[in-house]
Image 1 (cartoon, rainbow, N blue to C red):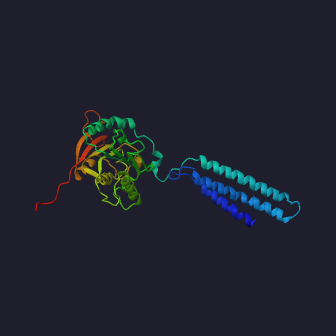
Image 2 (cartoon, rainbow, N blue to C red):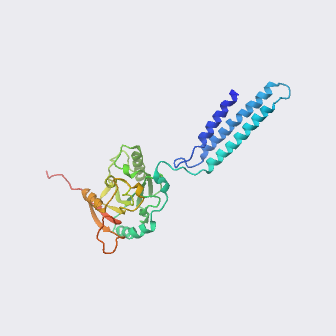
Image 3 (cartoon, rainbow, N blue to C red):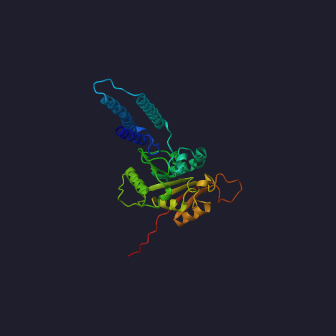
Amino acid sequence: MLLSSAPCLTGMLTLRLASRARTVERPEFGVLRAALFAAAGLLLMLPVAIWCASFSAQHPGHQPHVTPAEIFLLAGYLDVMFLWFIWTLNSCIFQSVEPSDNPWEENWGEAYSPELKKHLIDSVFKRLDHEGQLGNLIVDVGSGASPVSQLLPSTPERKFIFVDVAGGNCVSLDTQRIRLDAGNIMRPELLSYKKALIRVCRFLGADPRGPIREERATALVFSDILNYVDYRNVVTGFASFLQSGGRIIIINHPTRGIRERFAADGLKRNEDIYQLLEERNVVIEHKDFPCRPYGATDESEEMIVLVARKAARHSTSTPG
């Protein structure tokens, strides 16, 4: 009994390990899980082999004598083990992915008013692109699964970096998705920040050991994100990667969105973003309030489409 209990318990633990709930980080059934299930099945069958060998050893050279109690115990074990194994295997293969601790995962993949955004920003994008004011490295902060910057035409030189707290890290020829909480852009000591920086450097062919604050982005896009983050830190942090003369494009409505997830330091009034941009030497070039009632003049809580330019730094050196 003691000898057969060891593989039985080991098989149960192996089966438990193989049937752990899937998450975004462990989405697939995979070869490893299949191997664990196979090992669990063998371990759970091993007690049966041990019992059969034990029965034979008790009656060498004679027909083994098995009592009804032993038959009942063996049959019960086989039934329970088989049903439990099949149920666990089926549950693991067909289970849905469990949500992670990140509350935004449940919204990942949902479009955030795509037709409205296209109506609001498409003409602005086309004008800026026609005038050559967007450049070839577009960083879309809080991009979601359907980044608004995808409205921009692709060119052989243009690259896009999509930053979002949900989704995954994936790369293509002209696109890099970065899984990063935008609110941590001012915390370079975090591991997630360092990993994101390494991925971006690899994507751009840059040395990650070089200057961290190298200004390479030519345009930043903030679309429906400033209510959910400390907008001062997020805009300031990402603007430090923006070239002089680069554009900041903001689409936001201070009162629209999932209110229970609004950040305490999120944007409450449009005037606050004006003040921040002025403090950071960023000049507002264009403001539009496409949903403001006709004749209204208050713009504090209206949807805004804003374009601003990062001014060149003034030299502080004095003639020799």
